[in-house]
Amino acid sequence: MAAHTSGPNGLVPVHIAVHDPAQMEEPDPQAADYARKLFAASAKYAGISWTGHGAEPRWLDMDTSTCAAAINPSHFSGHGAEEFDRFLSGAASRGEPALIIATMGTADDDDDRVRSVFGRPGGRVDFRHFNGAIVGKRLLAGAEVSLAPGLDAADHDLGLRLVNRPPSAPWWAMTLQASALEGPRGTTVQEPEGELVPILVDSLGEPVVARWTSGDGKQIWYVIPDGVDWNRVVDWLVQRALPTHVPAALRRVRSRHHVDPALETPAEMQARGALEELERRYLEDKTRLEDDLERARQEAEPMRNGLLYGSGSELEDAVAVVLHAAGFAVTDLDEELGGTLSADLLAVLNGSTCLVEVKAAAGAAGEKLISQLQRHLEKWPQLRPGQPVTCAALIVNHQHRLNPAERPAEVYQRRVVEALPFPVIASGDLYRWWRTQDWSAVQAAVLGQARPGGEQDETPARGRENPAVGRRRWRLWSKDGTA
Image (tube, one colour):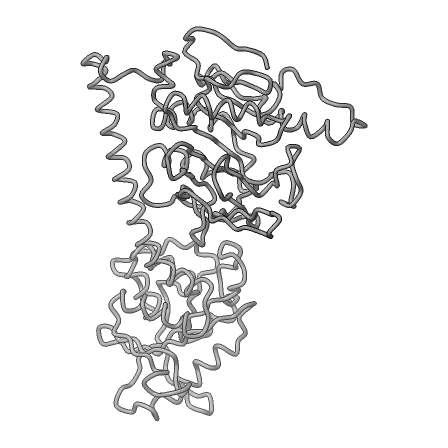
């Protein structure tokens, strides 16, 4: 093993269990698979600006006893086991925890069971001198991940650096697994040691980035998914992880990223204190704003889903909420009268009483929806002779299988609706008015009246089926079609 001696140079030594990529030549396409995997393993670290981040790489065949951290160390003889043991021994002799970064899985391989060039399964991270392992199950493409709650500053910073990886980047859900040892008397199962702390979690709360700490605190493993931006990770290692877990390593090399607080000038102390306070306020504000956003989404989702994608009672309930917010007294006629004896809703405002029919159409809306409301209007005097209606409205969630931006603006063509005695309103318009709290637009649309003060709706004139001006009041039709 090549010796590496030097005085303090400001760079933190870090062990990586591959050969120096600068010394590796790309193998011929006809070369053995083993040679190509060796080159690929080293090539992952070729683009790291080590010096820029304040680090110095120690590759295979280099002394690792003074290294402050290790990246993907190997357990296997001839592939880094000796370097790994010297790294662990060096940390122990100094009374420091061994800080280790390991990747889970193989980004370029869909089968985690395929063993890597070092023999370790792609979806498994084994500890050194401790029982148990972290195993990973590759998630389907498009998996959503988020920060786990209650993280300290270093873990929170790592999570922020990894959470916004490209959508195609893979994730693995991680769990601690017991060790199974085969012996002459059979298999012995040893429960996993240490504690696994989630940093990023998937939608089910399972960790996809995590920190494992041994029970005696002598080893700290950060397990991250394969396919990361190593410049981000190495920068985090020097800027955040080492100051938190192994600050003496920075002092030994006189790293520019660390100054003993006892040696700081008043100006340095003031600036550092202000920065720490800024970070504290940022975390508090971010948590508060995330809570505000979650509450707002919980309020909006039922309305967004109901008005833009819903049908049946989901759509009717959302329409009722909009009408109520716009000032209408709303009655659920299906519930009050039973079944489908009348229209879906009765909306009353300032002396106007409206029958409201709410329908959904996966494709183009058929004219049958119009005739249904007309029949309800004819039947209403028999149901409520003492409560005449003065207006009606048909609200339709049309083409609801399409993205809202792809739907036609009008529910029906102009020639169909011009002869109708009641407005036809797209539920997407109701959502837009609810979202902007434009209650006068809701009232004008449902009542078929001009908006107060001559205001005009922002919807372009093309395709509007409930114009604010010129809508005539409907009159009950007799069965023979006369007014």
